[in-house]
Structure formats: structure tokens, C-alpha cells
Length: 316
Length: 267
Image (cartoon, rainbow over all chains, first blue to last red):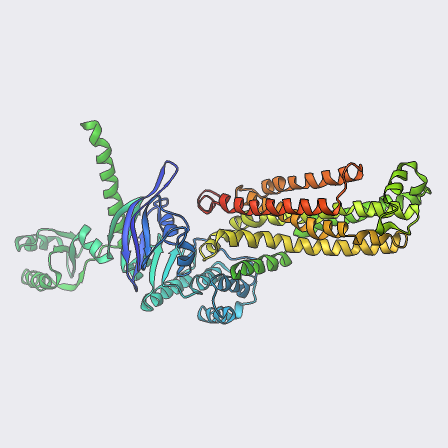
């Protein structure tokens, strides 16, 4: 559907994006994570055909993005920019109507009415955009982004600054887009949000640090762990499990965290050993580190790699 | 064309919500309208001396009395007709000065309001964007010119000698208002839009764009000194030159419009 191949973008001497590649399929929600200045917005702009990569290419279906094809391809992409970007002195309906005409929709008035209804803003259609709350502005901006029913939707920090209710509405919308087999690329700092809706995650810091599903990233960095809550202190049972073939066992109060290779098969063994040792088991759960921990671990590891690379030549 | 009209519709709707942008245009229009009436009607009344009593205008009467539009006018009427005809050039300045602020804000205004990026994310091309922006400034300017010209003619019919108004309907006069005026406005506004897409402060765009007024003001001065007259062939020649200038400015505008720099470097 959308392929980024070796995307690199320089602004003068500054390298904003370095050799980023990925391929997106319909129905996928792809999250771009990274600290400020990591190149997320630049990547989205290259995907949207707003700026050209210095090297590398963006392919949309069978077409390669170029100055010649970009105007046509932009008609099949919806880009929600970081700021809602509404014309404050125009009412909501007129804001959308201009975009319906810019996209050359055959029945612009009907398309706008449908969008207003879909996004629950029909009753605010005649309000000036400048008078809307931030949440409503974002809803109008989303309606504008999806007005022409694009196959690919690029969302740049869609929930930034929104109240929890509005943020949830946006997340639900993204899930609906996924169900409708749209390809969604999402740039955000909200890791909890990514955990809930993203199929795959790309961690970016100028270059791509990691790219995988959230579960695979967790497993890669932290391994698969089980969390066993006991009815008593957990420390005495650490040796029971280590002696029983489990190498990485940690105790914290009444909780045991055990690294396992194959969770479904390991759980009965662990429970049996603990019960035999006299432990009272309250619960057994998969011990999932938060995505935030995964993200921070990736960035730390990247920092260490960068330092090693810097030290390398001087040490030699 | 649909996209040009879509953006034009937005710009006109936006202008209707913000009429204060046209205050400079109205003030320039009033000044351009009043000045010839002050010279041809009000000063002679207060000075209690007819223009034809002054020897300064003898050459005007001698030169123009046999022109078709001035036949049948007495010397006072001939001088009035000459003044009102020559001051028409000043009327050309009205739409340019008035719309300059609109044109200067056109691109940078969108950037400052953070509305440019979503706009550029649509299939709109640079030509369509610039054309819509120029037309968005030009159309209100032309409307203003038409209103000013109507008021000017009405004023001449009411306050000047009977028959003087005919001097405003010669091919040369109409050429100045309805051919040179729009073409000069188009050039000025295109220049302002070009500048607006290159600077990050609307005031800079306005100041540079206003420079176009200088040659037109110079034309007025040269005409009034009698060393140059905008005759029919001259008007056609100037119009052709302006047409070339406008085509060149559009091509230059497209070349200068750096959407990447606008998106990534402007703050």
C-alpha cells in the first residue's frame, strides 16, 4: 500500500531522517515514536508528498512519489497536521466545503453533510471555527482529513492537548479506520495510546531504532515473563524456582517475576513447584512491561551504541 | 480550475469577514477621487478665479480643444476635461494600494495561521495556489475600481461643466481604467504574492509590493507635465508589456514558491 525506501532527508547540514524504510499494508495502524526532533513530522511530510526526500523514495500502490505525481497522490492520502489549521473566520461547514472542492469531490455539499454527521458536529456546522474548543477543532480537522475517503491516513500527534474524552474519541476513530482497512500512520508521544491501537511501532531517532509489533519489542528487550502473586513473601521461593530450571527469577514483596521461554508451557510447571514448596498462589499473569519501559530501554541502548561508536576511533 | 475557484471562494469569504483589510483601499480611493475635484472645481471656486483665466492652461486649451471628446466645450470645460482625464491614472493606483495588504498577507497569512500545511496536503498545485491568491486580491480590487470610476463619472456629471464627462469615455480613458488598471494591478499583486511566499513577515511583502506604485505615479507626473501622453497606441503597447510582465511574474512566482522552505523553516 505505502512503502518508504531508504528515506533520508537533510536540511542544510542537519540530518533530519536517515535511511528509514518500512512497508505498510491496508488495515494497519503504524505508530511512529521518538523524542522531539527525531524526524517523525519530516517522515510524515515525505509520506504525504509535501517535501521530497534527499535520497530514497515513497511508493504509493504502483506510483512513486515525485513532484509530478505528488498532486495526484495527495488526493489519495489524508494528512492531519499537528495544528488543526482551520480558517478561524469561516464557519465549520465552509471550512470543509473548501476542502471538498479542493479534492474535486463530485457532490461537495453532500460529502460535507455526511462528514459533519459522522463526526457528530452537524449542530456546530454554522459556528465559526475560531470559536470552537480545541477538541472540537481537532474533530473538524479529522473530518477534513477523511472527507475524500483516503486509503492512507497520516496523523501527526492527533491527541496532543486533548482532554481524555476527546482523546478516546480519536482513538476509537483510528480503530474504526483500521476496521475499514485504511492504512494509518500515527506520530505520537502517547505510549499508552500506541499500546492500545498500534499494530506495529517504529522507534525513530533520526534513523530507525526499532520496528516491530509492541509484543515483539517487549519480548525482544525484556523477554517473556510471568508474574506470580503469592499470599506471603516471595523471596524464600526464588531458590525453589532457580533450582527448578528457571534462571531469571526476581522477588518484590509478594510478587515473583520469572523469565520464561514458552509461557503457556511454563506456567503449570511454576505453579506446581511453588505449591509443592508451600506457596499460596493468588494469581498468575503474563508480566508485560509497559511500552514506555520498552521505548526508554531502546533509547538508552541507542545512546550507549552512539557513545561506543564515538569512543571507538579515539580508543583506536 | 475547480481548485482555484475553491480557494478563491475561501479568500473572498474570509475577506467578507474581515472588511477592515480594505480600509487602505477605501482611503486611497477617496483621495484619488477627491484630488481632481479639488484642483478643477474647489480651488477655482475659493480662489474666485476660473482655470481658463490663468495663462498656465493656454497651451492645454490650444492642444486639446479640437479633440473629438472636447469639441463644443468652452476653454474652462476643456481644462476641466483635461484634468479629469489625466487624473484617471491616479484611479489605477486605488486597487493596487488597496489590495496590497491582502496580497501581502496571502501566503504568509496562511502560514502564520497554520492553515498552509493542510492546504498544501491537498492535490492543489503551486500554480493553482498562486492564481487563487492573486485573484483573491485582484477581484475585490477591480470591484473597487469599478465603484470608484462610477463615482468619479457621477461627480464629473454633477460638478463639472456639461459635456466634460465625455472625456472619460474616450478609448484612451477607458483603456487606462479597464485595461491598464487591471493589468497593472495584476502585476503588483503577483509581485506581492511572490514576495509573500518568500519572506516571513507580511510587512516586508507589503513594503516591497508597494514599489510597483512608483512607475504608475511617475506616469501620472510625466503626463501632467505634458511631456508624455497615454494615447491609444501607447496604451496598447503598455498593455502588451504588462501582459508579458504578468506571464513572467507567474512563472517566477511558481519557481520561487518553495513549499519545503515554507513548511520547514518559517516559524
